Image 1 (cartoon, one colour):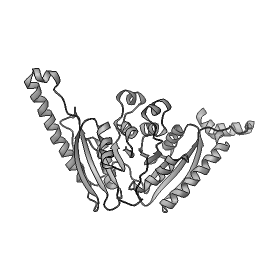
Image 2 (tube, helix red, strand yellow; image 1 turned 90 degrees about the vertical axis):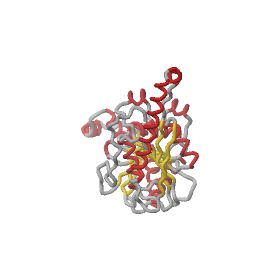
Image 3 (cartoon, one colour; image 1 turned 135 degrees about the horizontal axis):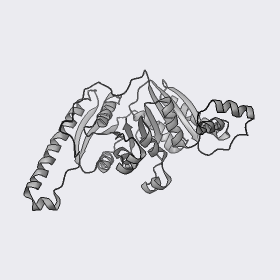
Image 4 (tube, helix red, strand yellow; image 1 turned 135 degrees about the vertical axis):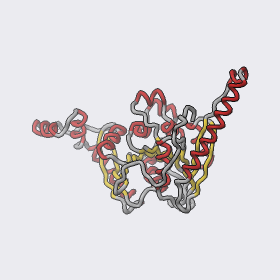
Length: 335
C-alpha cells in the first residue's frame, strides 16, 4: 500500500462493468483427464457462474507420434493455410493418434460438464504440443472471458524445476484465469470468498466481478486490504521526528484502507450474501493465503498486476501468481 498517489481515486461506480459484455460468458477449460482436472470441473459449481454460457473444453496431447509423411500435394495445400512453422506443426498434428485420445478426453469432460450445467453450450477440442502454449494460443484466437485450469499442487521447488501449466497460463494470459482446486462440501451449498483489494483498478475489477456473479444464499464474502506498514527502524530511535512521521503515515494508510473497504462493500447489494471487511498487516502474498486457510475459504479473487512482459514478471514478481502458487483453495485472477 505504500507509495500511493494522493490523487488516486477510490470511488467505485456500482453496476458498471469493466469488460466488454457478450450475450454469453465464454470459458476455455484446460482438461487432461487427471483428478485435478476433474476437480476443476466440479469446482465451477461454486464459482458463481451464469446459467447460460459458452464453454470450450481443450485437451492437449503433449507427446505424440507423427502421422505418416504427407504427400507433396498435401504439403503444399497445408502450407498455404498457415503463416508460420508452428502453425504447420499444428496442421500435421491433427492426424496424430494421440490427438484422437486427447479429443476423447475432452469429450468425456464435455459430458461431465453438460450434466453440471445443462444449459451451457459446451464443445470439445484437442491439439498437440505444449499444453500451456496451446492453451494460450487458443485463448488468443477464441478470446474467452475466463480460462479454467486445474492445479497439480506441486511444491514450490517442483514448480521452479518442472514448471507449471497453470502458473504459466495465469501469468501470460490476457484474460481472467481460474486455478481451480475443488472443495469438499456438496455443490450448491454456500461458499466462502476472499477478495483482495488495494484501491487499484485491477482490484476494483475483482470486486466488481464477484459482486456480479450468482452465489448460493448464505454465501459469505470477505473483502481484505493487506497493509504493509512502514517501520522507522534504527533511524527512528535516533531521530524522533522521523518516528512521528512514520506513525502518521501508517495511520493515514489505515484510514485510506478502511475507505477502500467501505466503498467496495457497497458493490454487494445481493440479498443472501453476507459481506465483511478485514484489514490485515503484512505481505499480501502471505496474508491472503493465511486468511483463506484460517477461514477455510473456497476461493481467493485478486486483480492482475498487468505486467506487460516476462522480464517485468521475473524482476518484479506477481502477487496474484504468488497467491495462486501458495493457496490451498481455488484462486481466480481477474483482468
